[in-house]
Image 1: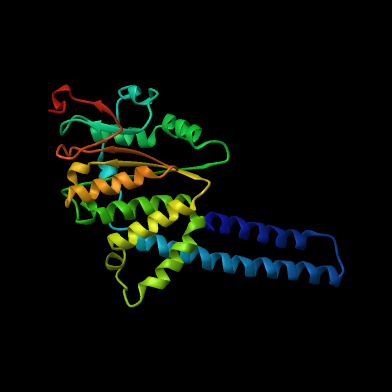
Image 2: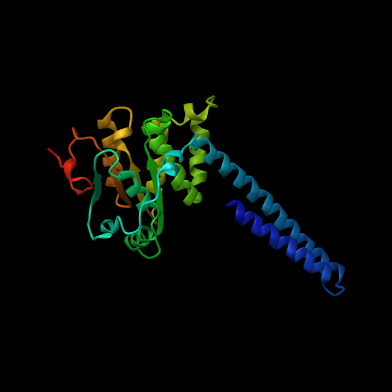
Amino acid sequence: MRKGDVEAKLSGVLKDLSQLTLEQPIGLDTISIKLDGFAGSISQLQRDMKVTNSYQDTLRSILFERLKYRCDRIPAAYSKTFDWAFEDENGTFWIRGKAGSGKSILMKFLCNESRTSGNLQTWAGRGQKLVIAKYFFWNPGSSLQKSREGLLRSLLFDVLCQCPEHIAEVERRMIRRRGEIHDDDEFWTWEMAWATFNEVVSEAKTTKICLFIDGLDEFEGDGENLLETVRVLSSYATVKLCFEPTLNRYAYKNITCHILDPSAQPS
């Protein structure tokens, strides 16, 4: 349960309690029944607060310093610059261009644009929840800001914030595996983050997820492993993926390509 939901329930209980004091004189039996109801509501609120605090602890363990720092530093796009991005295309969308050509600006624009969420909701379908998660690799940053671990932790954090109903299962997984590991960075290894993310995506039957991944060329590590991660993410029927790589030595299949800089044409 979100903190705002708990606060709303508490406000409701306090309102009912104040209303009781304003009512005309009533019998002791009625007062006793109403007070029992208030006691039950307060007990439920205490349980809800405990769950909320536990959920926040789980999310904090996934979070790492400056997780959104790179995205926050990217300037906004000029109006209508990227309208072509909303033309009808299918498959994975590959954004390609030289350094400084505006790839990250485009990616940030797509993440925040209302037309993006509107079109994605149409793709998700009626009755389906839409989740948008994003990650911006940043090579000058910390090791997590340019690693697969950072990628998965960021995506997992975004998904769980929008799908809190899956946090309880993540907590159970953490309890089973944490043992004597108290350091969050040591606990959230690539294997743990990958297994947890895949479990959440697999269990989210009524949820469609769109992932925006920027700056694969700023990733530090084995490019083949990173691309295999991208391939697996894009294989889910409930997942749509938009990413921006400059990894020329790797093969891409079934990709829609829009080149921001004609001089960046593949050789």
